[in-house]
Image (cartoon, rainbow, N blue to C red; front, side, top):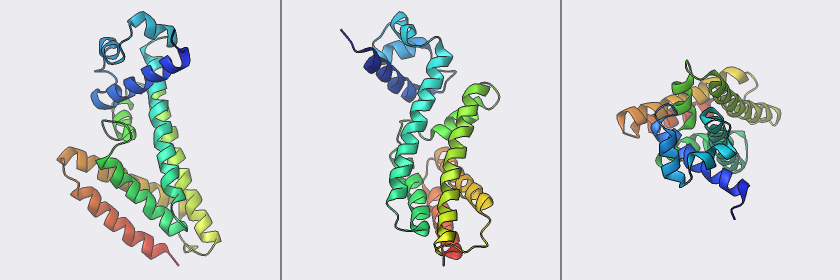
Length: 196
């Protein structure tokens, strides 16, 4: 007899990979049954419908991303090092994605912006969470005299994340890591400029 929670987690993790590589709309329930080895009935014992599974899968991807993000931040001894660690996280993440298929923020955000408002809301929450983390690092850096106090915290954090995500997007489009390498080099200069 299977453990229902483990079964649900397995369905979510395997579906997350499918959704992140094929897209939410393009992934059929048949794809999910094939990947998981469960029947449609077994899947629907754990989820009310495909949208429920999509939401659970994105929340799973978001949690995986937040865990790795926090791990990288903890490696920095001060605010500038923590910001550099985030940059390196995106570079590593491009080469060794947390979830097969690349960045769930980009993949899900683009696909759901006009078609799945509830799912897109979760993407916004994840982006806001990551931005809040960067803002917190900057604020602590100012408090501990590691970051210049004239840095516009919200603006810097927003541009910082947008630049990284944009670098990831260009790398995926061009199938070449040079754009992200340049982005990280540029951000390293910006971090030096705001550091004390």
